[in-house]
Image (tube, rainbow over all chains, first blue to last red):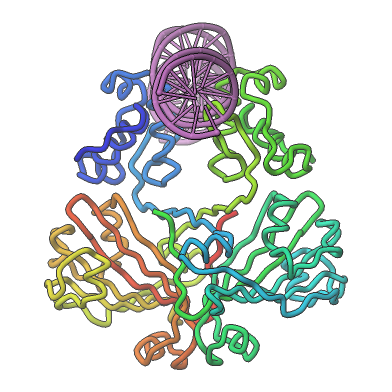
Length: 233
Length: 233
DNA sequence: AGCGAAAATAAGTTTAGACATAGAGATGAA
DNA sequence: TTCATCTCTATGTCTAAACTTATTTTCGCT
C-alpha cells in the first residue's frame, strides 16, 4: 500500500529522504542544486526549495548560499513535543478529569522562582497548588505562581472552578516560554498529594511563560510515578 | 532597539503574533482572510500565506478552507526539543568527553525491548552498555540494543573506539523514531555506573529508531541526577 | 606568494497569476 | 423537518520570473 503524496513538495521531500536513508546520498555529500532537482522532478524551483527547506528544518540537510545543500554529517535530531492540556490528556486516556486546589493565596515570591521569572524576590504573586486527577487517581501536581501584573484579573478568579492553565492559556497568549524537564525524588508533599511514597522518581516539567509585560506564570508540574511523556513522531 | 524583520513574511508573523498577544484578535476570533491581509500589508497573498502557515504550525492559529483562519482557543503548545549528541553536549559545557563500554556482546532480546523494536523476543542483537563522562564524572549511562539486520556491519565495530550513537547516526539515517521521557529511581547498576545512590531520581530517555529495514536501535539513556533537559525556545 | 577586489553561484524571498479542494452554507427534494 | 446535493469561498499548492544576499572562487595587483 503506497501512500499518495499530499503534494509535489511532499513527494520530493520523501524521495530525497529515501535517497539519504538508502545512502544514495551519503552524509557530507553535496546534493544537486535546486535548479537541477527542479528539472529532474519536473517542477518549479520554488517547489524544490520548499521541499528542501522542510528537510533542513528537520536537520537532515545543511543549506548555505553559494555552497549548496549537503547531507548533515552529525544530525542532532529535533523532535516536537506537544505539551497537552491536562484535561485533554486525561480525557483522551478515557478517564474522568477533576482537579482540586490545595492552596490559593498571595505569597512573597521565593528567590529561585523570582530568578526564573525575572522578577524581584519577595514580590506578591498568586501562589497556587493544585492536584489533577484522572478517575480520582492523582495524575499530576501543579505548583504555580501567577504574576498579576502580566495577567490582570487573576486575583479575582476562583481557580477551583476554572483550571488555572486553561484560564491563562485562553486569556494570556504568550510570546516566549522557557521549559525544562528533570527527574526529582518525591518530597513529602509530592508524595502525599500524588498518593505515592516519598522518594519515588517523578518526571518534572518546569515552565515559565512571558508576554510583553513580563513573566506571566511559572509552574512546576510533577507527574505521577511511571508517567511517560511521548514525543510526537 | 527594534530588531529588523528578516523578511516580509517574518514581519507579518510578528505583527499577527503581536495582535494576538495584545488581544486585538481574541481566542476564537476569525481573522481577516489572506487576500485582505495582503492588501493591508501591501504584499502578495503567497507571502501572507507563508506567514500564517508558520503561526498555524506553532499552534497559534487554526486554518480551514472556506472557514477561514481563527485564533486557536486552547493552544496545546508545541516545543521543539533538540536531542544533542552526548559528546557535543559535554564539550559544549566546557568539559572533556570520554566514554567507557561496560559490555558489548550478542544477547537474546528481552520481551519489552522486542515489543518496542517490533522484533521477535529472543532474537540475537548486539547489546551495549556504555557510560559517558564529562571531566571523568559520569554524565549518562546508555543501554543500547542494535539490530544487525537493519544496521549491517555493526557486529564488526569496536564501540570502545567509536561512540555507538555517532557511528549509527552517521551510517544509518532513520526514517522514524519513537521517543519517551520518564523518571526512574536508579537501580543498583545505574547507581554504580553513575556513582550515585540507589533510588536517586534519574531522567530517562527511551528512544527507538527505524529505517526501511525495520528497527535499527533502541536505547535507554539515563542522565545523572539533577540533569535538566532544556527545550529550545 | 599573499591580498583584496570583483565575479559567479546557489540559496532566500517575493510576486502575480492560476488552478485545486475542503467544507460551510444554500438549495431543493422527500 | 431532514437529508442529500450544489455552490461558493478561503485556504492550499504550484509556476515562472525576478530580485536579493551570503559565500566561494577567481583574478589581478603588489
